[in-house]
Image (cartoon, rainbow, N blue to C red; front, side, top):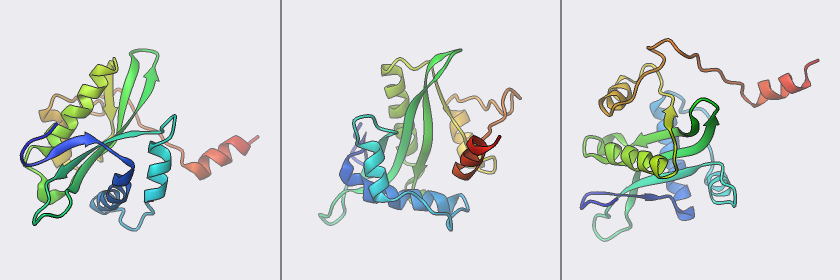
Length: 171
């Protein structure tokens, strides 16, 4: 999808440097700036393989003064499965740089991800959002998303690598 102000397109291997930069911005935005984030090399290895761990769309704005276009946002997603609804798209990360918000980039990026889900016969798109991020919560609700936490249906659980290893090694 393209407009005069921005373009939404599938990520390419040469986007990984800018994606890593934006992921660091997202970590800082979430108060996790000291947390180690994924590298350019890891993104390239995990997204551009025969069986990718994730896919991504990027948002770019035209260059100023004849330089290269600038990546200002991205959406990272993958497919999973539910025995209740079958095919599910999971939106792992979604971010637009603050100075580019309010221009329709986020809405267009989200809509393109949703279109890919529909084209791939997904029956649901799901994602998590930090509870303090009221701007994101309003954005998602404005576009028709339901907050299933408010409905009281689910708790989200996680085991990090260390916990996974400990669990698999437990008696």
